[in-house]
Each structure stands twice: as C-alpha cells, then as structure tokens.
Image (tube, rainbow, N blue to C red; front, side):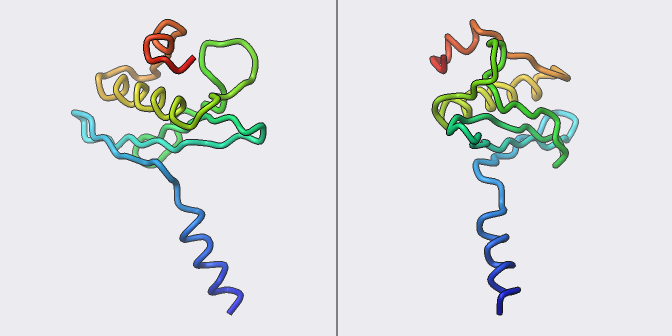
Length: 105
C-alpha cells in the first residue's frame, strides 16, 4: 500500500506543470516548466526534445539572484524564449527592454 501511494503521488505531483509543446521547422519539440524558488519567486526551465536547454531561476539580464515576482511573469518570458528558439535562435537571450515591453519587470 505505501508503494501505491508513492506511485500515485509521483504521478500527480511529479509531473511538470505549464508545459506546452512547440514544434519548430526542424521537428524539435520545445517545452517549458515554471519553477518556484525557495524565496517564493519564480523562474523557468526550457527543454528541447525533453532535455534541459535553459535553467533560469532568476530574472534574466538583471543583476542579483531574484526570481520573477509572479508565476505569470516567468511564464511570459519562458514563452518569449520558446518563440526565439522556434525562429532559429540557438541560445536566445532576453533583454531588459524586452521584459519592460512585456510588463514583467
């Protein structure tokens, strides 16, 4: 019985959340997962074909180690990274100006 509870817990809580998939022209599958940091801020991971490509627990382009204040802000920037990957950027960067335009900082 304890093993069954562990299995059910892993299936329900161990699954990534907020993981839309996007195919690019070369058939790669991109996805992201929103991270909740220990200080109650948010970051994101981006995957290519299920393999971690970008681990971004902090707000990119800003000094320090603070994450995004809201889950929604982290998701908006993660989606921007996906769009850049789909358009052919191999290792996309996110600028302060882009984040200001998106109203996430």
